[in-house]
Every structure is written in structure tokens, then in C-alpha cells.
Length: 65
Image (cartoon, rainbow, N blue to C red; front, side, top):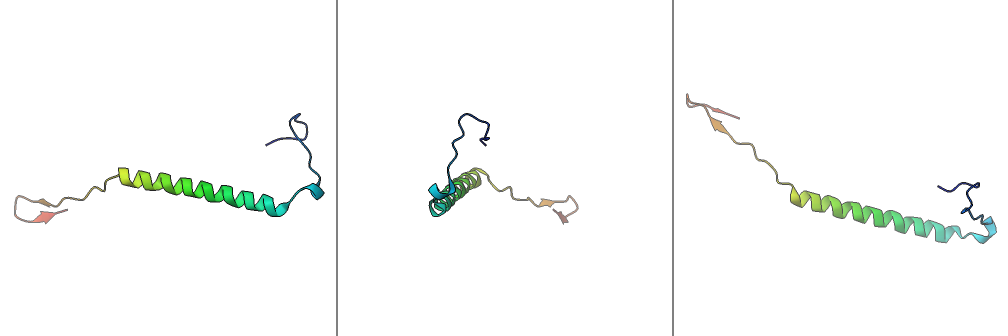
């Protein structure tokens, strides 16, 4: 985050800002991040296989989990 003391900081008067455009840009960025996160989660879920529990049979004829 830029500080006022940073030489790259450029002050913009409130009259020159457009809040509608700013909020629209922020919404687009949030939507893009959510889509990217969803894509990563979907990819990860396709790579993971569910391990099914096997039932074992005891020597005396009973069953156990």
C-alpha cells in the first residue's frame, strides 16, 4: 500500500474520482478472484481420490470395520 510519503503516490481530489467506476472495478476483481479460487478447488478435487473403508473378516467368522 502506498504512503503519502512515497514518491510514487499520486493524490486525486475527491471531485475527480468516480465511486461508481471504483466499486465496479472492485466487484470485477472480487469476481475474478472467486472464479480463480473455484477453478483451483475443482482441479484439486479431480486429483484427489476418495479412499473407501474396507471391511475385514475376522478369523472366527465375525466381521469388523
